[in-house]
Length: 195
Image (cartoon, rainbow, N blue to C red; front, top):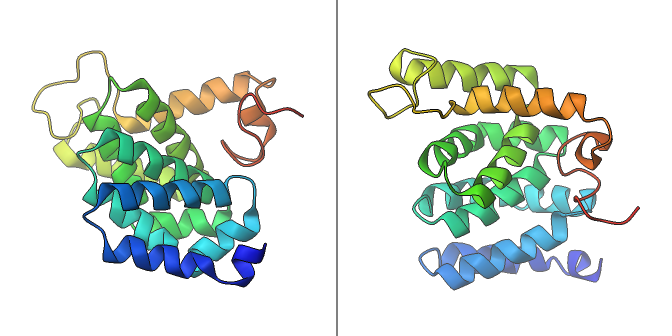
């Protein structure tokens, strides 16, 4: 709380913006953001109020070639999107596109796919966001069963909107899951937390 009163997040964001090209600065900044927003809606609000939503989406674009950095970005997106108004803000800054692009680029990276799936789950609670994602994926190459950017059908992989629908179906059937117990994927508890 003291950090919030001192408005320290401003200084963290200024450092991250000034040293955009330095991976250690970005990595540390994202770690701090993640720690603050994990279980605290007030910090989610503060991060958004100070421009963190735009910064996180910009980092998704800047570090699209780095799975580890994208993992941190997707985790932050997932936590922020646990709030309705932040879901909308993230989508306005292109978070859906960055998440779908990450799924297409790294389909064999299990850790990144999990983080990206959780981000997509929270980014598509609002039904129009699901429709937007489906329309963009289908419009990308005119065929809903092809991965964007590929001229042939995906080999056993589903486009992000199909994977999202499947994830939602599985979560609806698994009522014992902590993820389902919260309003959204990462809202209240992480898997393995006590309570």
